[in-house]
Length: 155
Image (cartoon, helix red, strand yellow):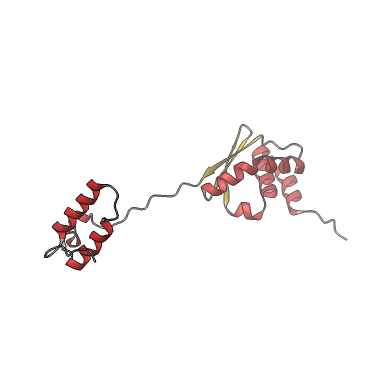
């Protein structure tokens, strides 16, 4: 019968034979120690001076893994006594800011549309709940300026 060994053991020894060095060993140990769920939401970024930098899908994952970092380091050392990783650093994946391609409000016809009296009346009713008197008066003045016809009394 063939000698059965774990794929991680084979990959680890193959990486060492190929002279890939500490970085490949660090990456291999991380993959084995972190587990499938964590590997699905992380990406290895860099290994330098004993620190393995891991990019996380979200700040929640980054925070959780920071908390679990010591446990993962212990697992890595248990897999290989020559573990080159002394510290784990978790960063959050940067997401590009999306810019909305809508024209500014000042350039739309919608901005200049007058409110119907009943719409302004409903808004005035909501404004009455404001605690700040100056803000309440400013909202009421804006509503009066934006209505076609007189502002109806609140119901």
